[in-house]
Image (cartoon, rainbow, N blue to C red; front, side, top):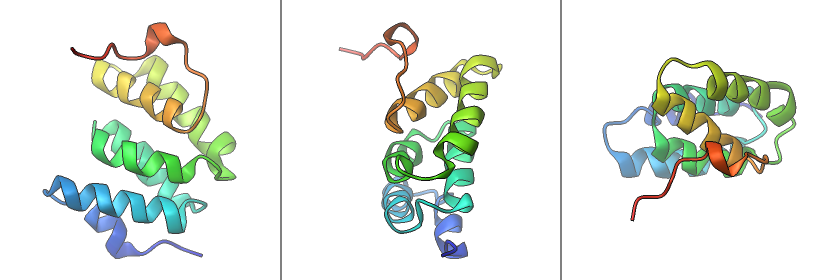
Length: 110
């Protein structure tokens, strides 16, 4: 099954709720597609935590998790110049069910 071009377009909506709901739908119904995996990596690069947080759980059982997502997100987490991209990548790995050392996760604000 391929993902809907409309869903991919809605992931870039200016409305955060639209992006969140679209990411959840994409993850639930198209979580095993290359387009959904690419959308997660793109959201991490754009620092869009709302999409990442709602899309990643749907991709946790994807066959692309180990072949595409883990390598791409690990590289961003370790090497990206932007600290927020590195943090978002680490959170995405955690959202996918990967073990991420506590010291590299962001500290919750109180």
